[in-house]
Length: 310
Image (cartoon, rainbow, N blue to C red; front, side, top):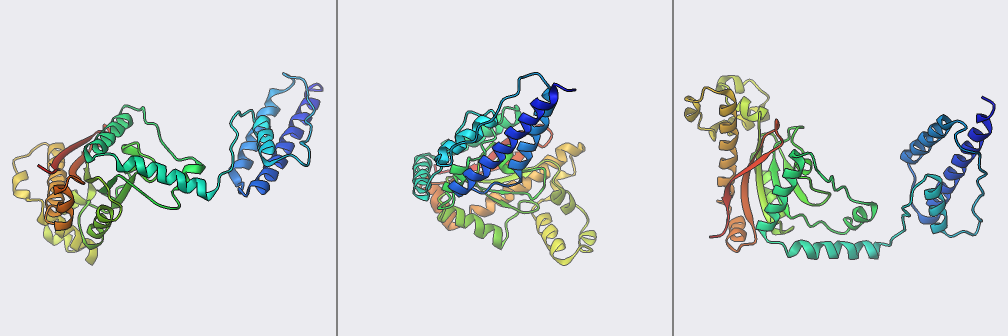
C-alpha cells in the first residue's frame, strides 16, 4: 500500500484546502455554509481515498490572499470538480427578479394556468417531473412578494402533496389543507385572501382516492359522536353533504369511494359559488374554479365541475 499514501495525503490536503476556501468565500460573500458543505467534502475525501494510486499526487497551491470572492468560489468549484460559479446578488436584483416573474404571471389567462396544472400533473404521473425547486436567487426573490397563480383547497393527507403532484415550484400554488378538503371559516377566509389579494387565476378544490375523512364521515352518527368534540363536528358536517342514500346501489368499494369523494368536492365548489366576491371574479373572467380527484394509485388528477364565465 506504499504508493497510495502520498496520493491520499495530497488528496486530503486538497480537501482541506477546499474546506478553507469554502469558509473564506462564505465570509467574503456573506453566505453561511451549513452541514451540507461538510457532508459533501467528507464524501469527496472518502471517494479520493478509494481511488488509491490511480492518479499521480498533485500539490494544491493556495489562492493568493488578495484574491477576490469570485476567485475563491472558482477555486472551490475547481477543487470539487464543478464548473458552475455561484455569483452573489443584491436584494435589488432579487426584487427585480420578482417583478419580472410577476409580470409574466399577470399575462396568463385562467385557462392557461389550468393547462399548466394539467401538464404538470401529466409530467408527475408519467415520471418525467422537472421538480422545479428554486435556486438561491429565486428563493431570495420570493422574500419581497408572492404571486401564486393557483389557490388550492386539498386534504391534509400526507400522500397528497399538491406541489409535487402538479410538478410546481416554490411560490406557484397557495395551498390550504384540511382533512376532507372542506370549507370552514379559516379555509374560506384563506381562499378569499388568495382570490382578492394575491389575484390567483384558478381556484381548485381537490379530493383524493381513499380519503380517510370521507370514509369516516360515512360511519353511523352514534359512532361519530364518540369522537373528540371538534373532530366529531367536522365529520358530521362532511356527512351532511354526502347524500349517502345515493350510494346504496354501489357494490364496488372503489366506485363508492370515488363517488363519495367527488360528491364532497362538488359540494365545496357549490358552496364557493355562493360567495359573491369570488363569483364577481369568475364573471369578470379573472378567475376559474374547478374540482379535482387525485387517484393515488396512478398519480392522475381528473378535473370536473368547472365554474367559469359564460
